[in-house]
Image (spheres, rainbow, N blue to C red):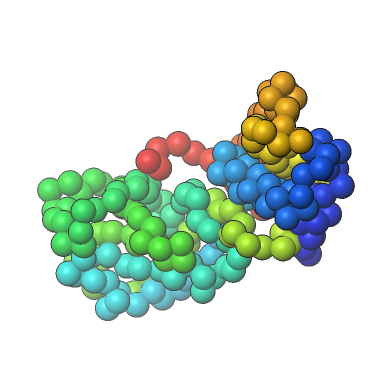
Length: 222
């Protein structure tokens, strides 16, 4: 189910009276995106069975490119949380190459594959050196709602910790804008501290497995 961004509006307007409605709605969506980035608690996962090894690009460090929009919509990737290849776990490390032909031969690490996001809808994973058979991939990503949405999943509204964190984050960001009728640096400091409180609660719930659809977040991915 989805909830309209506008449903957050009345509560937020109490914090920033006089703020234009479009700015309020934008602040809500940006706060949701910020909270997703800070917590890694909003996730999408998918499995690709029998991945065609012939699509491995041997001119680009034996990389595979996954079109993320094939598996989920209306979300931008934040970070990978889990990668399994044929049921085996692999660590992932982000590596931004100067160009596609940069040579990785001398920095391959056992149990590790590298990744990058060439675009918001694609993910590159490499190297798959010497792969000669099809394989299965399971991938779990921390994501955030994409820009421009008018509605988001109802968890952001119905879960108290998410909801309160979003309101306080949006209020803080708006109150820090100077020279506006709703500017309030002192209140912004309070809202920032409350955001950090609720953001921390979401992170704890995620680590403890208390939120539906989330997983324990292990270190070592970067």
